[in-house]
Amino acid sequence: MEGFRKISPKEIADNVFKMIGDDWFLTCAGTMDDFNMMTCSWGGLGHIWEMDVATVVIRPQRHTYGYTEKGDYYTVCVFGEEYRKALAFCGGKSGRDYDKAKETGLTPIQCGETIAFKEARLVLLCRKVYTDMLKKECFVDQGIAAEHYPAEDFHRAYVGEIVGVYTK
Image 1 (cartoon, helix red, strand yellow):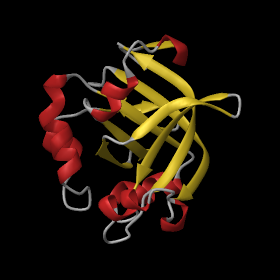
Image 2 (tube, one colour):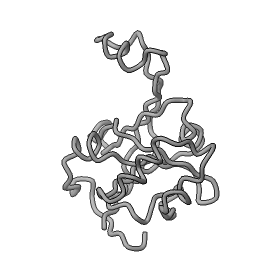
Image 3 (cartoon, one colour):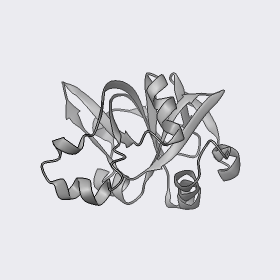
């Protein structure tokens, strides 16, 4: 990807708790001709099944859900603070109603078989390896389900092998 250099997942210098929970990121899926992205602040990075992985969670009612279901790849795009307003727009508006890239000025670029954004400071290209719906009965602490899912609109979790890490 032009303007980026490829690094190993082990070279990611960010504090992942801050990067995911505080800084937010875009989960992107689709093709250059047909894609969507959504802002996330829930997810995780780790190592399982002898691979480095990124996990994102998406509710079925989100427009990005269909793109993530259909494709084999998704990206996690991390931005600098100067893009906070764009990320807030992407998290608060639906791609069904808005061309989010046009509205925010973000520039889609090809990343493997899916898309990322030129303005990102860090991009993780992920190949889906596991997915499942979160289930009420599987919460050991039922208070979490009650607090975060009062309508029982549970997320689907996507675990993706990180097949590329790109940084500026």
